[in-house]
Length: 101
Image 1 (tube, rainbow, N blue to C red):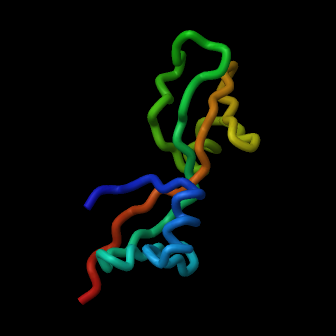
Image 2 (image 1 turned 90 degrees about the vertical axis):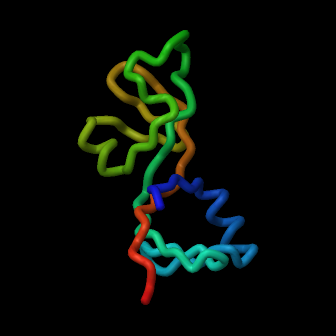
């Protein structure tokens, strides 16, 4: 199973519907019985005020650690990278954990 990005809103919905549980940094999809190690992340939606994406970030997911390493700064639902502001969706990236025995 691949890594996956889950927005904060979607994770809240899944939790409220009983489709997922979150314990610390571990999310479990109840129907599948699969668990993921979760890290805070964003997905880039669009470059603001630009006709193009000068840094090829739109559609990509970056963890908060990646943003720090890039020298990018998140302000709410925006990330400033170099001279470009991007709209982002806040969430988590999940790395699949081995199935329980």
